[in-house]
Amino acid sequence: MKKIVVFILLVFGINCQMSSAQKFAFVDTEYILGQLTEYKSAQKQLDDLAALWQKELEDKINEIDRLYREYQDEKVLMTDELKKKREDQIANKEKVMREYQKLKFNPEGDLNRKRQELIKPIQDKVFESIQKVARKSGLDFIFDKGGDMIMLFSNPKFDKSDEVLEEMGVTPVKDKAPEKKDDKTPTKPGGIPPTKK
Image: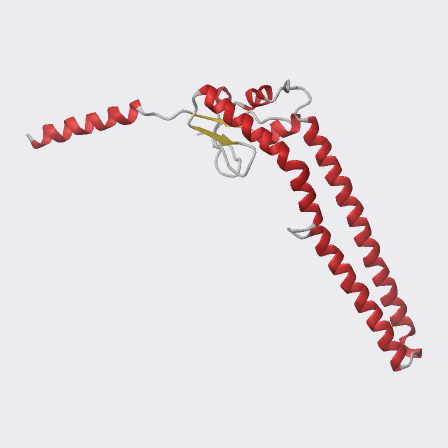
């Protein structure tokens, strides 16, 4: 009798789990962002700004190197007072260079602040569109294929990236988009296809 009750409870439990199956899909945010003109424009602004600040930093480093070489060449002829003055000058230039580097490139620096200012609103729009697509499609989960998540297999019929773009009013351009991987072949971790026996 106990076995029959356990069997009935087990069958009932499996049926309950099957009836509450969750629906899921995935998007490729790298693909989506690559389709957005405003994202490309913002990324170009950031790249140009980073290149400008990097050039300014390199100029400061080159000036410090030049001053140090001059100091090394001339220090034999210098008085102790002049040596100290030149060493202080070089140390001050190094301090200014490090402060500049910190100001521009640290995690709380100008470059990250500018990235937040330009990119975050675009990412927020993408996120809102993903949520709308999920609600319209009755999905419980949407995974991001474009991030750090490794998908060993993904069926293209569950890819909602183009629907997200359409929700944002963007027509997907397949031929100009970053190449999307055809993930129909399952792979081992590291992207290695399984060996055939």
